[in-house]
Image 1: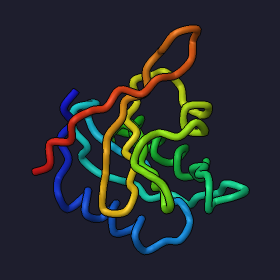
Image 2 (image 1 turned 120 degrees about the vertical axis):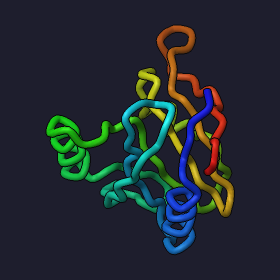
Image 3 (image 1 turned 60 degrees about the vertical axis):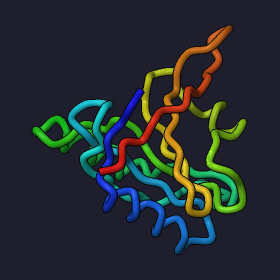
Image 4 (image 1 turned 90 degrees about the vertical axis):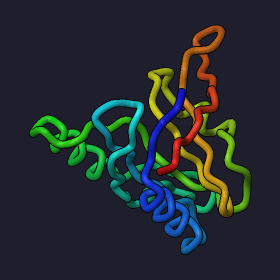
Length: 134
């Protein structure tokens, strides 16, 4: 799957990740899963934000309310792996739902896109997507 994102949006996500010691996170917004039109940075409210992320529920609720009022849909989220690689971790897989949502993971200056989908025995697998940077 190819997903379009403006270079300014991707640069902003990478900059947010580079400026933080802990994992950063936020929402990916768009009209359809094939185009990221905006991002909504969110607080990481995880108990151990250096190793995990948990989106602030208030940010998620606000984004869904905005979508119901005609704003862009929540099509996924982004987060960083400050001391890792830009691939989904075992924790990411344990927390994901196989719903086709986009997972943009940043590590260092690398950003990679993943799609959460159903695997064997109901477990989540991630298929790598292609970022179309414009």
